[in-house]
Length: 136
Image (cartoon, rainbow, N blue to C red; front, side, top):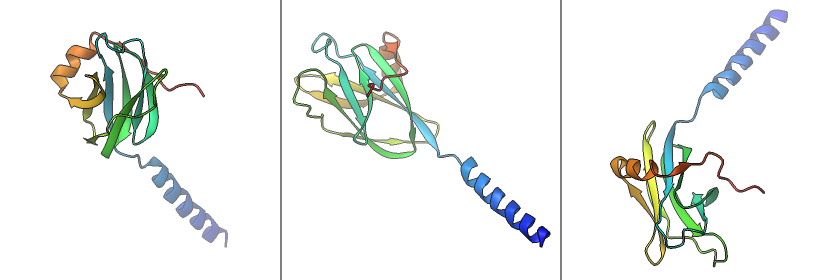
């Protein structure tokens, strides 16, 4: 009887530990803001899949680990605004890959995915922020 209980416990233990050790596949997203002078004093609120992930100022960037798959990103102007988000940008995250998202303000807020070479030139001139979620 003790052997059966021990065997059942071991089977349960190993099945639970295997599930907890299985990690979700992840990629990275660089959120880059370098919008020039227009609106530079106003922070932006960044949403990934309609969830607030960051408040970011001009000439800043942040790095986010995100699950593999299709996602959307949008941005809303901070301060006194309508709170209206930009049109969502759809992007696909692949395991171990990096996506670069930049915000522009040409009359209205837009999100655009950019290439690594362009992103490197921009974020080298920007400050990295690691804890950009607003305090609740």
